[in-house]
Length: 158
Image 1 (cartoon, rainbow, N blue to C red):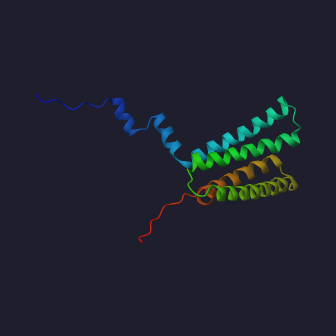
Image 2 (image 1 turned 45 degrees about the vertical axis):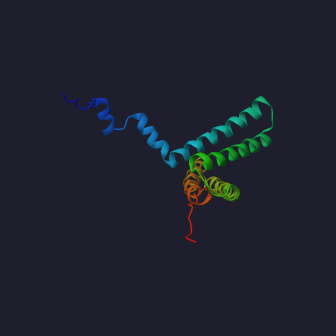
Image 3 (image 1 turned 90 degrees about the horizontal axis):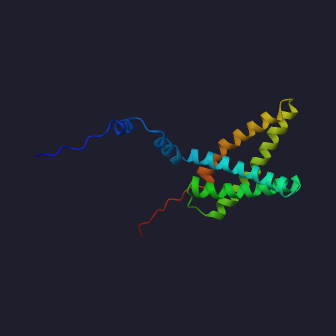
């Protein structure tokens, strides 16, 4: 007697044709843009959460709590973008220097856009949203291709 091959259930056949939500999540997770946005959102939440904790719970004045929370979230963002999002293998100190330079540029550009919107009589809130959108777009490309660029090992034939 010949054994027949096991038949695929209709559920597994449907999964192969149409990715299930869990498969879609895996596909999205594998893309660096999704990880980049996830880490950015977590960094924002950390910044805001630490600010609230420092100020509301510990009574730290805003002018001290704000930069401390921001700097901690920047370090968190740098490390997670480097390790988790882009899986960089380049020189960490060079990446850190480039990251600091980009942060400075982002702060200056954001300030110009927000104050520019306000000076034009538009809402500074829209200016901040525009600045955030702009810096988010260029940050992704600069992170991927400049700050956290993966180094490919090339072996010379010596």
